[in-house]
Image 1: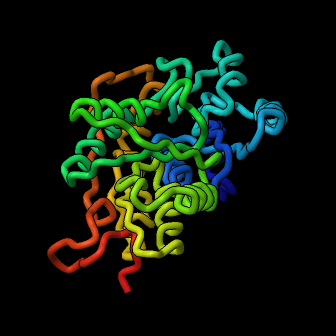
Image 2: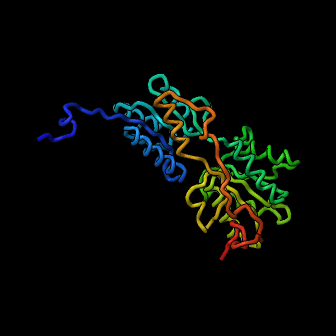
Image 3: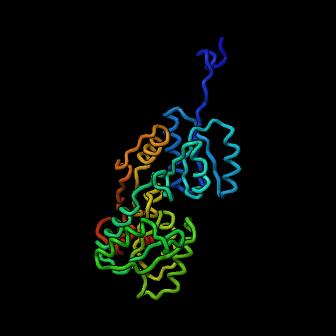
Length: 294
């Protein structure tokens, strides 16, 4: 009796690997991406080799070890390794599921459209003083999100009043940035609405508003639509993207050299909940998501 499937078939089945590089897995968006990538690679008959690297030197060491395996391509979930990855494009194909300096090698959502749509949503609520929270200081080269947001305000003869910088992607950093802003800004001068670069920053900003109290109200909108955004704790209005379509397009390009430049993977949509609303709204919810509803 044969002991293995390979022996039964009379041949050795060679494992096929695709490498996935991430700068940490705590971020809910990275978790969602990794879940979808592994699911689709499994369906295509590939094994996933995950490199979890938080710095260039860590990545270089892991990559050197990974080269001992027959890796047929690489998917990057972070542009932190942009330069290092470009060096080996000649040997092994790579694709980025994020924004990079080389757009032809990346698959990323239309962040400009997201920013423009969110700006219009907040303008519909008649807010006059609007702000933006970014993870890092990019004022010298604004993100596509910020560019779209500013464009929507400009079209309505409005200006972006405040840019808050969290100095990171985590909610605690957003909490500190928002709390500092609330403490140092007079109530009459505070922004009325804030668009956050991602959902984690939105959660941190909302918690700071709740803890600050004093009747403070600031409408909040995020980007990413992580699972927690749908919970009753936040009820966060946010921008969502079809992760399954993004991953499919990335793998089509990586494994089949087949691209659909104007496919549905580029499109996203608003998920309307309650966090962008004013204090008093009709219906089941009587307060917006930034304030305690209990």
